[in-house]
Length: 499
Image 1 (cartoon, rainbow, N blue to C red):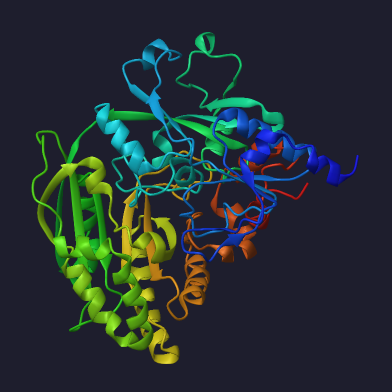
Image 2 (cartoon, rainbow, N blue to C red):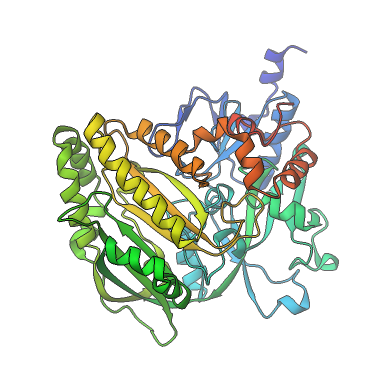
């Protein structure tokens, strides 16, 4: 039978769930693809049928969520499925081992956004123990690209996940957990194959969809809680002193969540920093205070960002004072709210215009000072030599070690240094590419979900910095022998070979 007749034989159901001539792009629009067919599965059986159809045609399958990744991790050219219709969540109770029943677990559909999940959890009296700085990602997209969260006392985002359900090759349903998993095999639904194995789980939990299509994620939730936030301004000269004498890292150790932002431009002889300390408040029952209302309004309106792009293009030297003003507006004397309101750190307008490269380093104070002062020096060089400007502050966060094999914080307690820019400003992408080379040379591991294309040429670096990468590639070969779930991103990173 010819290929053309094979396409005609696609089921009516799959035809109804898909479209052709569709141009997919990530949220900023700088990563695009035109797949053969673009699907909108409504249930797990649809995902199974799509995978079987792809394998019959020897095609590849990718799943996409909100498109918030700045890398090419989600890009696919054969079959692409948008999983936004899978957006529910419920408690996971019946198949638990007896000793696990004292905890609370929630089974979330892969297409649910973190924002919607937070609202559903709140109604259940529950919450995520940690999350990234934004909430418009789907939970599976955030997980698969290594979102980490903040706080060296709290588990990194992949480590709140206890179980993954995927549709694998041939449409097989598989549930994957650590060796000492939460599910009692005797109570498990045997229509879904249960794998309880550390190598399989810690490989799959950050895997860019390379093991199969994730359709549900089971997380350990915690009783809902409030966080108190305090933000204050300081000068880099003082922060540097505190880093080198141990005071700053003591503060990181003593607080639940610590981060800071800093102006890469020196104004009045120093770089302005905004320090944030956040701590769980077990006595709070309602919101008290709020963040700067002007900053909140600006951060949630695209028109403001559109104006920034225009002015940064016409009058680029003004970015210094804009960054300084934005940092001043982040000052918060006292703000207490539900956990997910505090952990959310960005305005909705950044969804379309914010883009960055982010790098993970060992949380060594000397390294932090070295890297930041290098960036400060490069900022001056870019301005003097090419009139290329940073349009945003740098963000620095501290994160606990993760067990996930390809998590960029797998090596130990980690500091993340985020170098953001604004999409479509002059030189925005080449600016990030240059910093990739610089930061990799300094031992920084690029975040899988941010702009990281320079890693395509640094496969040796990946294999030297991720001690369990060979376990990951072994599991990937076993889970996907036909290469159904590969894409160019995975191959270019040297994590799999083209079948």
